[in-house]
Image (tube, rainbow, N blue to C red; front, side, top):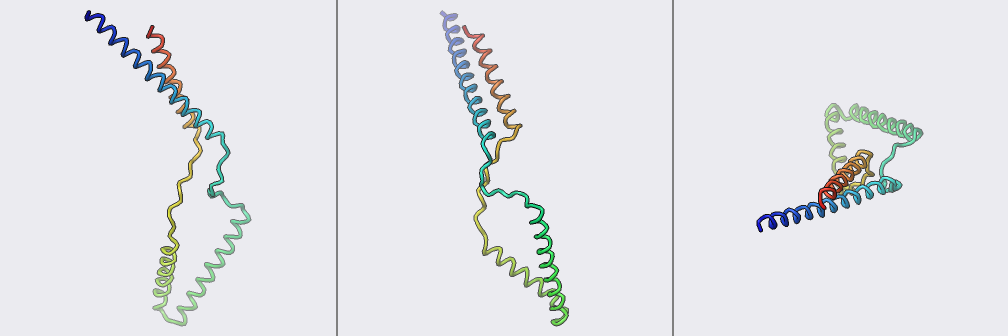
Length: 144
């Protein structure tokens, strides 16, 4: 009687292990399929930043450099007319104005864009799927 009970417990345990292995294999396969579909999908136009063309970079350099140089000349001319105290007052005032503008423009942080899966993600998911299938196959061979 004890042997029969031990055998039934062993059979129950083997059945539970087999069922858990089948479920793990299904989950791993579903994850791999989802990652593969996500990798094959075209990138979404979520407003991600891309590098600027070279002509835009050149225009930004020229215009931005001109603005900065113009501001520097204005600052130096203002200090010449107002005195040496303007060397400290003008940058501090400009910093306060810039800080005020930055605080007024505060926006909620952008929603993190869902990144496309990398090759490493696909390889890891494929390995998990193969491992789960190997465990399932081993348990099927052990259980009559």
